[in-house]
Image 1 (cartoon, rainbow, N blue to C red):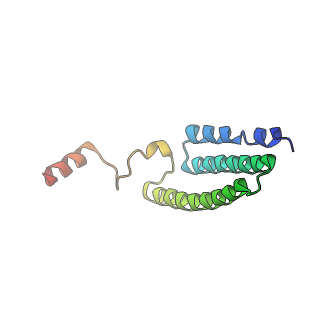
Image 2: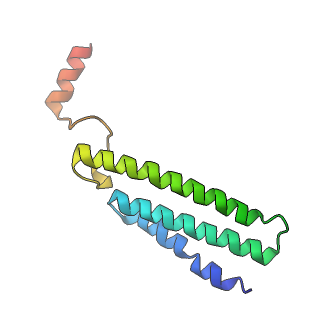
Image 3: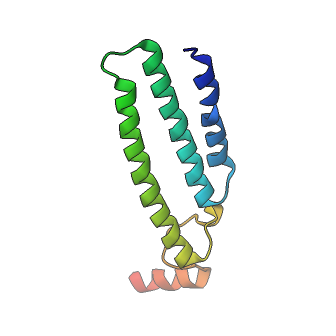
Length: 116
């Protein structure tokens, strides 16, 4: 087996990095993270076959990575849905703070005077 083919296909990791850095929608960011995890899984299995590992550690790590990605997408999608219900948007750049509501200067000042 040539190692070039799965490694070139695993260049999808770079596409995933671009998606995480350039996208503004939280769901597309999660999809990009899943693309990166799939590229890592492909590399793990390809190098496991290429090195002819007797313990098949690349395949074992891939199974753990599949379980990790399933848990990550479940928790991440739940967080995105809750944020969308609260704020009405899933744009990452508009979610700078994870406070309960929108803050304005008068609201922040009134909260500071009541706490002191």
